[in-house]
Image (tube, rainbow, N blue to C red):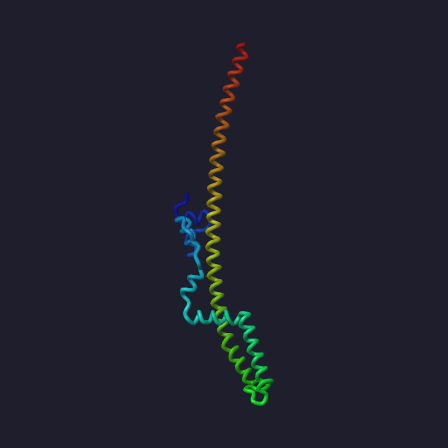
Length: 187
């Protein structure tokens, strides 16, 4: 059928080969070689993460969980109850809980950039996933077009075969009709 990337690019993508992106060339090459292009993008991303990246992702995952929220809420309740009712006069951080406000501000000041770093990495992962999805979808479309082409060729050859068979049958019917006509005229 088609033996080169140039042929495939012209036939299925309606583009000249020099106008193809690297991704499209890779998809066409995998089509020619009949190889898969799907891969686990999570493994590729995970192999390039530094310790800081993994730490930031873990902090963001924990900081954005219900267990963290409920645990932190329990901590705040214990802090306020402990400083208002239990310690009253010898309270470590009496009302209006200035030290608690400082701790909360420091946690927020550290947690916000870490969560933003994790979100930036997630955005990059999403871009990689989207590019991979495009690659897989393009390969699927090309394979479907190739299947349609093969089915069209098969149908065309069947139609040609049926046409030839009809011509052969018509000639046979014509010969039979001529025999019958001769037999009827002879009798």
